[in-house]
Image (cartoon, rainbow, N blue to C red; front, side, top):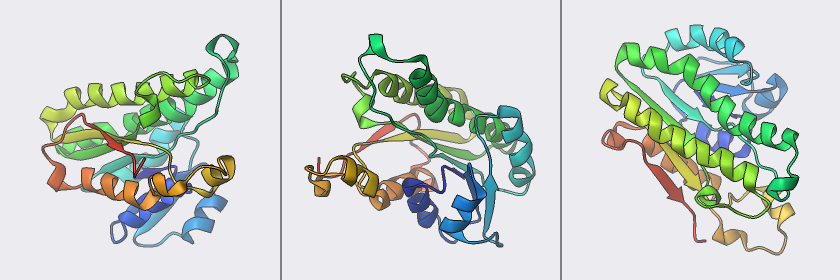
Length: 223
């Protein structure tokens, strides 16, 4: 299960899981169809507002029941460059926590109980290298992504004895067209590519990473 599947990183992660049965989740079906085409035997498109917790549980329940080995990749998230903390509007705080934390907790609430029932599961979250310390004008984003890291650690301690691995990646700047447009004077060869980041996520979802619990793995390219 991949949330934020229509985004740049979501598409790279979906590609890394090519050949697996993928549940591809994003807000709008049109975006999912543009990225992936139609539903098929190996992929199910799920337009879903992850900020609606009860709707998330209802929408995912039959798909979870049909999956024997559950992997949840919480890719959905977002970034805004804010203002000084004392000037940051409530709307910015809410948006950063909604996009980066509440999407994660709602998807987790829907999926993890079935993982516990089966004694197997993998959860991979997206933290941020820039949120390991506070940054000026990034207080809301840093607080939200730091929260992702702490939730990853908490979930790992709660679930590691039940056959479930919970880990996160903490990328630096991801090489996307949007980031290139926003930072035209930067050198994108120093950034991390979506494909390279997706490969790390794929490893954390594999049984080769069975001994890895509660890690927040820096993935920083050449920067």
